[in-house]
Image 1 (cartoon, rainbow, N blue to C red):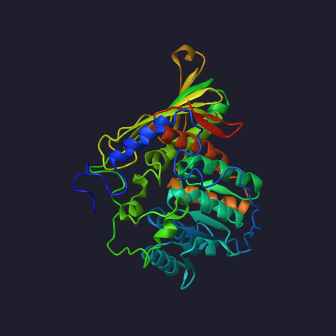
Image 2: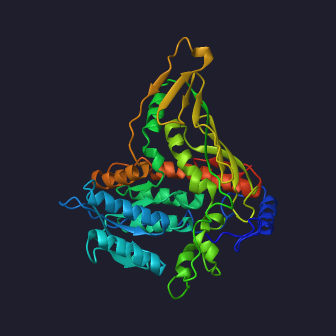
Image 3: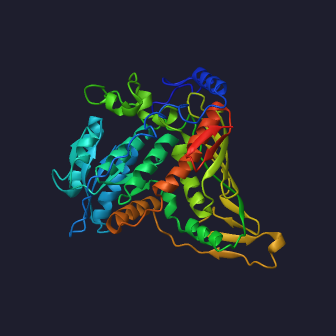
Length: 448
């Protein structure tokens, strides 16, 4: 699978010496303001004017939601196949009418898959996603591009009058998330859903109700994790193809996009999650799945302090960390600890500790057990949760239902921005060796 023969040998695009330089330069900037520390911070100046969305095309009498997909790579093609399957089985009235992709083979493959399922020329393929957004017949756009494009593409789609499903993490950097939140506040008729599908699991919604009903008292401490293992390094299963020819069948300049001109690097193109300029690695790609529904259940407001440590313990060729440990404090008085790993699969039990009781969420159901001091006053309780099947399919269906009903999605921009405070500040903390605070009133963070 095109894996390096020696996992300790740095891949093109990243090296231990570069990591050391970044850590040293971060330490020298102690006390600096949050914005401006990482690539991508300047993409969306907070002060830039916010545009008004074009008129949204309502779903017609036929009830068919017409969508476009940006980035039909691995995850994007999974979305395409799922929507087509829902339509074929009569579960959803949905049609993929457009895809946008900078690489020729992926673009042609996605179009062929759609045309085989929906009829010849049912789907138009674009290189430039803005041409797709100009179409008035599209109701929603799914953004499955690399992380450094999420914010720009989501904003462009919203301003074009399209509802958005943006893959996780919502943005690459926190300033982008703050900007996108302002875009949605300025255009309240539009919808945005983040692709954190575990939000659909009934156990988290049951936990949210338990906490709101006061059944565990004050929630004081929670924990979760996303841990997995690999022999030679994470995300190396994305193959590097010899037929990629920038300028001929791949628009590398357009792929780099907001980050500016970069030298062609097939390792970065295929495995961008391994590199800090393009991804937050474990934190944004994996841990958001666990953090997001837990934050929803807790309802403890904005994260106000984040600190983290990261290591390069096994996969020393990867620029992003292969082991991360995060601690988060919230404005209502709560601490969350989060562990992530791509070098060991034994994670933490997902649970919420309250002053009077504890909620256990590792299984399919929501279990509450009282603390010993309150055992005579509070009964154990288990909420048996229904099996919803594939939670990602449930999340896709929910987005389509929201487009029709105009109901706010569970994984909306407000929660997405709160999660990005954790993602971004944890990432900065690991690279710069400092804790960070966040002020919800000013929407700014700073190093402690």
